[in-house]
Length: 377
View 1: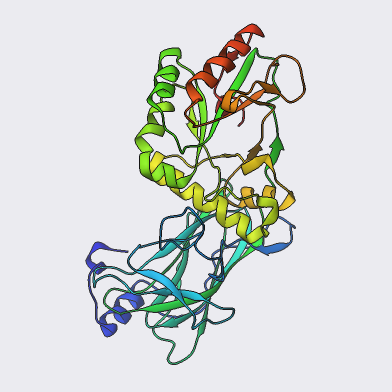
View 2 (view 1 turned 45 degrees about the vertical axis):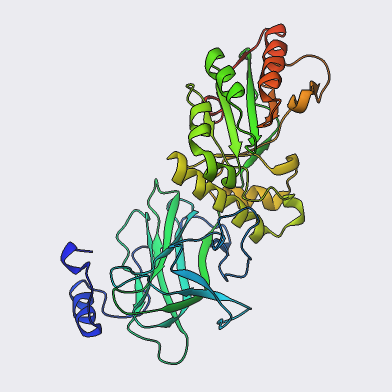
């Protein structure tokens, strides 16, 4: 959008400007040919009907799966279907009240994006598709709901798209419901409990984040240990600098561990996707890199987990072959640590001594800690 148009507009001026930009019809738009993949089309959108309640341990007021202005978006019971819909009131005349989400897709594949909307000057679009895709929009829906639809074909190297719903400057509130991104799903993530390798390495992973002790941070720095941290969004929000410091050693990273640490096998596929994608968004916002590895809480997962993780950009669902948390020294297969073993620990008040015990066990087996992202591509 040209800079000169990013200001408050009357309804008449908005219509004229949009006509100049080639956006004059609130109908479907398309930019590509047929899909290459024969994979059946499914709805890839996260929390598409806005029916999933605020996730436990999430930021108050958040809408699972969606990134909206905290003071602008909420839920309405005046829904197109189901029990709730997205309701957005832009905070001021300089805001469009945008709500967005990122979803993984297949390259060179065709997708259709749609949503039901209510209000004046409501827009639905996708970016990151590899092509310029005009949004679908409406100048007003009157007293009812209107279906907006657009479509696109991803480029040969495009693996994710950003979906966005928004209004227009100075045009007031809008409501949206039943979002659908229809097209082929990404391949499910790969699940593993170790990292197959002949290298004499072992991988230290640390979960949750509730107790961020300086003793553990000093041990990691003094021994230059590459660690993979799986903090939950709430402790990340409280103390992101700590997790940045303990992952400063080359090879270290912050990865995904859900929002609320629930057993995913008790949740629907849609709820699992909201848990994983919402945690991914927090990690990206706080640490600057989107996670590609997912640690399921309690090391439990099912087939829905693998697909939900893939829809959130995760390539590997990683459990563990050993647990050295809270004073334990448990190698699940028995015996000493072996090359490629993944050691589970937790951010607790025993972490410094747990790290020492794990390091001693690794050295006794002739292994050295390595960064898991250097081996899982």
